[in-house]
Image (cartoon, rainbow, N blue to C red):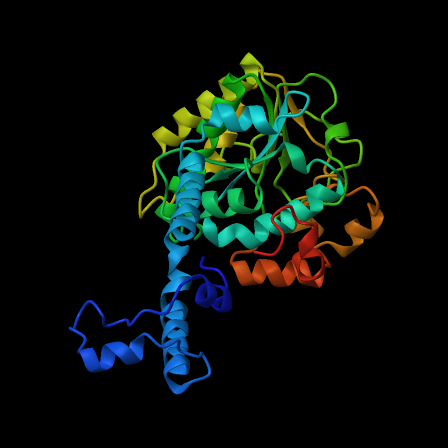
Length: 362
């Protein structure tokens, strides 16, 4: 930038701005040799002209460099995260050999923030890895919380991946066992959650023992407090009714076998308009078919109730008060309905506690 206008005028004699364009007559030449006062009409005119020129061009003199450098940094940042591998991400977030994983598309970002607030209160947020299913989610999470989101190609269409029963939803959820298997193959224990959950307590003390796979019952029927931790017997459809939305896996051959069988079952039951498959039946078939060789563990119902029980059985909720650890907002469809239900039960935390989320205000 030039110095101040007064120093500029003292450092250089005022030159006729048109001297190179037009010849000067002898008559006008003598008048130009006299000093020009900046308070004279001519001096004020020249001063005003210089101010206009500087006002127009000076702001631009440093702009391209900063503008392009900011653009370059933003582009570089985006490129960095789009090249970010699952192995790099897992290594970054893992604590004591364990990772907490969710899979999120852009429409679910408010639920992600709500879930993260509840995890932050239990001091487990640093081991969270968001598997972004679209680039908008990848960029937003890593902008707000660098290193905590990774995209495993191909990216999905975020707007078609959230409607339950749709092919987009199937494509979204069918990727889950592949993601989890990859993490297990990297040598990490992994906890998977859907983001329409809220933590009221620390779930890790419940992953006792050295079982391969820990899971929750999706049935709303009340179990005794001392119920069995074995895989429940099959229901009317010939398989159990275990929820695929809250799973803890140890990095064992048994857990890997269940994930591989889950993938096989999904391939055997693809989505169609007639048979609108989702990932949960395939998960239950995988558990049933591996039960004899894999160490499976059913988590206590009082700590991990399904939404069909927690939100619909007030008597049971009172009887088990203080035992609840993770609440799943299932047995209801639609973003707005889920949010309203969370609000009704004081579980929509982003209304008053959004700054507790590692993502801050979205």
